[in-house]
Length: 273
Image 1: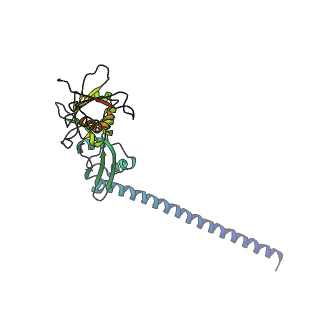
Image 2 (image 1 turned 90 degrees about the horizontal axis):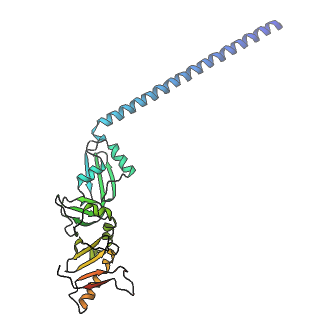
Image 3 (image 1 turned 90 degrees about the vertical axis):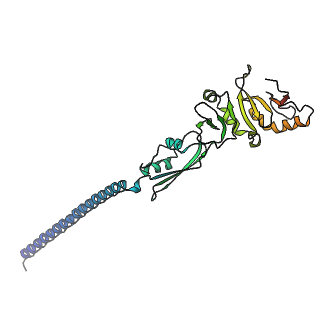
């Protein structure tokens, strides 16, 4: 075989190899292009399906709050809590989930709250823990409960008939003295339950002064600073009853307070007025 023929065969083989590589590369490109198109179509299909599913779910009853249940409240009405919650029936259930995750404030008078969602039932269950009710403020337009956080809530039912009645108080006075409600909540339960009425009385040397009527016929006079000396009330009364001046039914708390060396109050006969 001549050299020229060998060269011709080698050139022909090289051309065929190049053509083969070109065909293979074209096939590879076509496959990749088809894969890209398929992925795009699949992605668009999934997005469209998701949008349709969300739309269909939003139109279904399962996307809405169909019932709201409130538990744990005694003094604050359901209506007030719902107004503060700002959620109502037929709202999207996602709104309830937002409140659940963010722990939104339910309003004054509520110390703690928790939300549970029952998606299949469309039920939002709200459990609240109220601040203690420490007194009742009577008024011409109805009574209000005073909570330990100094919130005044409208009375819908007289469930705290044993709470002390406030006399000569108004909302402005309570706003100016927020420590009053807090201190009332800290008085020992046994003593607190013996208080029937708290009256603001004039005392020139005091910013605010109280006459506390006890349900056993005794009266306690104190300023706001010494209000927690009420914890010593049972001991003071016991001392009066065991002494020789049992008619000393008006008890006055002393400004220097109670120590081991000093008494916390003095008792005197009550004046005619």
